Image 1 (spheres, rainbow, N blue to C red):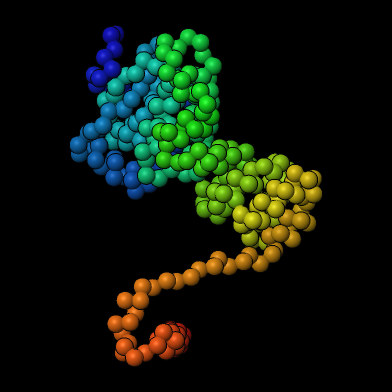
Image 2: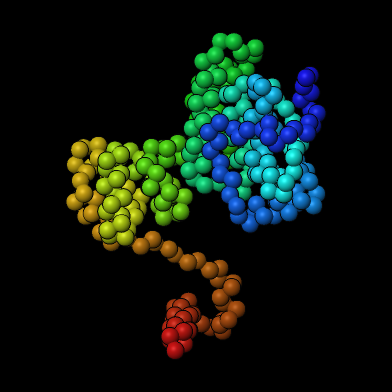
Length: 284
C-alpha cells in the first residue's frame, strides 16, 4: 500500500511486534492502570509509530505501553503512523520518544543510550546517505555529543549511563533500586567481572555499599592489580565521612522574633536552647 507519513492507520495488534531489543520495560504499575482506564473510556488518543516489515508485519517504534493497555482491555487494532525507515533510524526514534516517559530506570537509560550510540555510529559510516547533514554534524563531535543534543542528559552524564552496561546484572539491579548511586556505579564498572562478583559478595557480608571516593579507590586498585576481597572489605568497613551541611537562614526571618537589643550571639544561644527543649520533648 502507499504510505502517507501523516495518515493514521488502524493496524491489527496481531501484526505489530515489539521493537527488537526494546530497552524500556512495560510495567504493571499505577501509571499503567491509569493509561488502561483512559484507553478504555477514550481510546488511544496518541497514535503509535511503527515501521513496515516483510509479510505484512510492523515493528513498534513508539507506543509499547499503549499497545499493552489495548491488549488488556481486548481491543483488536491500534491507531498508528507508519514510518518507512531503516533499523538505525527507527532506533534513534524509539529512544528519543521513550525519553518522554516520567519513570525511566538507570538500566533502561544505559541500554537505550548504547543502542542509540551504535545506531548513530553506523549511520556515520554509511556512504549511501542522500544528505551530508549527518556528516556535517559528526564533524568535530563525538557520538555522545550528538546524543546529548536531543537528550535530557549531558554528554558526561550519558557516558556514566553507558558505563552501566559493563556492570554485572546484580550490581546493575542495585543501581535501579537506588542502593548504589549512578556516579559510584560508573566507577565500579571499570572493575573486572570477577572483581565485581567479589564486591557483590562483600556487600552482602558487610551490608554496606561504596561511596564515590571508595569506588574510585577500588578502581585505582583494580588498575594496579591490587584489588582483592580483603581490600574491598577493608574499604567498605571504613566509616563514611558525614556530609558537611551548613544551614543558612535569612536574618530577616530570625530577627523579628527577638528584641532589637539582642546580639547575634544571644539570639544563637536562645535558638540552640529552644532546639534542646524541643529534642527533650520528642524523647518523652
